[in-house]
Image 1 (cartoon, chains in turn orange, cyan):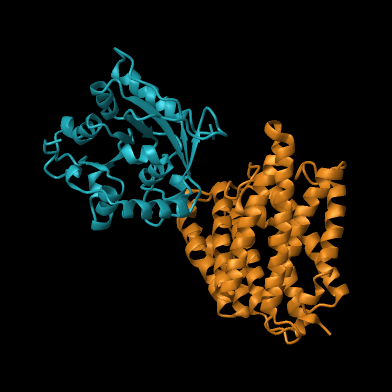
Image 2 (tube, rainbow over the protein chains, first blue to last red):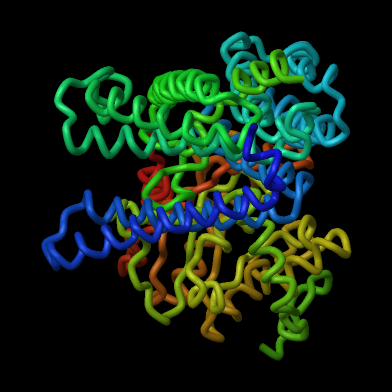
Length: 318
Length: 226
């Protein structure tokens, strides 16, 4: 029998966050020790590590607060994250004056509407709003200006920006609206599972890569990703995901398999978005989160794993 | 400061600045435009200490959000002493804009409609400079619609001539045109940057056209897209 049936979901969540705080305290301790040890001649790597850990404290704190306030605040938090990610994406995308109407609709209609549809549990429309209606409406608006120069490129880039930063990101909080008979009230734990596996996989790939990394996986796309980092990070994140089975409606082997899928999708999300970023001529999406880059640098692996995870859960568990 | 500006314009010295409005504007500008300052000479380290002496920040002008963005890019100590020079016909046109420009930005509104004699249009800006404020000035006098600024008007030269010790800081504003191009009224949220260049002075005896061309080229040189 699942532990989750005996412990209320909110209590499990408190324990999970307590675990995260313990983990971060440990990480901060290591960061402090490294800082002390290398003194004034400490490397950029240590500085970056400490900046990342500090940012993690903020991100865990904000997420924890949102979870504590319930599903609508969590949804709003993701809407804000989408907003900043969209702003970063469009800032790097060379749009023209003729795209202004389409961009206005992107920011002020599509983004809020997508999250309102999720908030009102309208599954049928939220899954097609951007891929169907956004796809048709936005180029219609761009025709008004009558500028045909690189029209297809401009329309595609705006559609990609919306798909990545709004549509795919919104699948994460959409987990909160699923009705799962075997684990009522445990939706926030599914969202926790997704974010935890994705982010822990990123962190562990970084750590394994720094410690044992030799062979580069995709030197032109993402020079810091190595085969050793990927294997070490992916296996340990999968194991950690499987070990969280008791907080989810999954059996241990199911949790492990799903975690592995999340990890692989997240890895390719990072690669694809890195390629997109480089094709737009940038190294980081922005500078919002100290040590990490922009909001999209932190969300890139969530973007690719969230829709797949959502549909797996929706298909097999609802 | 006792002299009356043009009959149409508002004497800002009688308007009390509102820190509430300024704070609200800062939040709005940060959310919509990020307003990231960069210093061309030291990309990674941010702005140098510009000190307390009055300066004239000059920038390319393509959008109504330029004034707000450049103002928000200034460090707090500079923002407190800097007053944007803004067009009365736009920033004084509605109650809201008047409130934002006068009470939030402490702008110096100038009348470019022709109602004020040409030689006196920049009089309120000169007065503000003399009173110890720094200025934000868009020397093109009007918004352009390209990455390359149009020719600079003589106003900058006259200001520099009357206050030859006041150094001029060139700034290039990026992305504001894409956020709110000419003819649009709703800004799109975009990360806008202000790239600050090295301050310069009017050389003794420098001819008007030479000075204006030099000033324009210092602004253009800061365009990272070349």
